[in-house]
Image 1 (tube, rainbow, N blue to C red):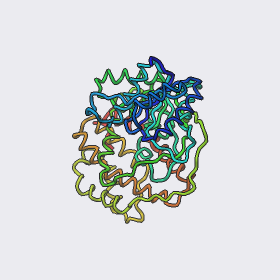
Image 2 (cartoon, one colour; image 1 turned 90 degrees about the vertical axis):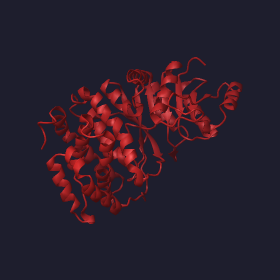
Image 3 (cartoon, rainbow, N blue to C red; image 1 turned 120 degrees about the vertical axis):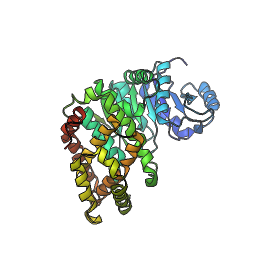
Image 4 (cartoon, rainbow, N blue to C red; image 1 turned 135 degrees about the horizontal axis):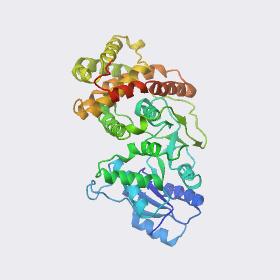
Length: 398
């Protein structure tokens, strides 16, 4: 093969039958006999699949996942940023019009849900299609508390899942991503940078309703590493795109495709008492670090918060937003080692989760949306604080 309309990168562990069904749906959309699908070795024997494809021209052409210089020989791609760059590289080689990356299992979705990511790319000339998952209260909390509202505030696009991980990406956008990765000498983080790149280059962005994503279970005892892995690249992009987001004054909704899915019940829970206990330990053990990162007014509010009884434990949105902004600034200034910095943020994040759990305890789907919307508005309202501290970190220290 030398060309393809669409490259489908499959990170999710899909069986052969489901993969073929997804590709059949895409082929109907494209009117093309061949879709290229990349997938991990778990999906089966590529040689057998290639042979079957050659016997049936309508079947997708499947190739094994390409290795990279960061992979161990004989093992599948483990680094998700490297995985996206692999999809982009193959898409460029095949002169593809677009690519889609499938990293999730979607529950109770029709077999062609992937088509909802591809169709706006192929028929409406969009450059980035982000997913809108049917959501439960305690799923995607790091995204809901920081990634989504921060992206909305900084780059002006109201998208719920800017880091996907299921995404549709046009040729215009993946070529830009490859160029940025090469300029960075391979040190970029493709997944964190996709939405900021699209927004700052005025590319067309939309959302697609795709059903409920199956989230991996959260290991609350080891949450610090996840916080660092996710927020580090996000804060780096804040530095890279500072001229862009400092010009962005407000946010706008983006077009949405498909029909939203409402979940009839939500039985998830979190251990509020353990999270508040972690926050109390942070107040005791991390004071020296927080003194370097947070202004006196924020530290005073945190001490007041620590004295509240468990049933009254609440973190105001404005306080949480200032904490996120101050940690982003400290990351930029290298106030302390960046790994130590992000690790010290974990007790504060757990405090936010505990307060959020109190707020959404009796909320239905509409109530959850209102709570998340109020948080997003608080991020936008607090943006002047971020810009003042970003521009004059020594002079502006409330």
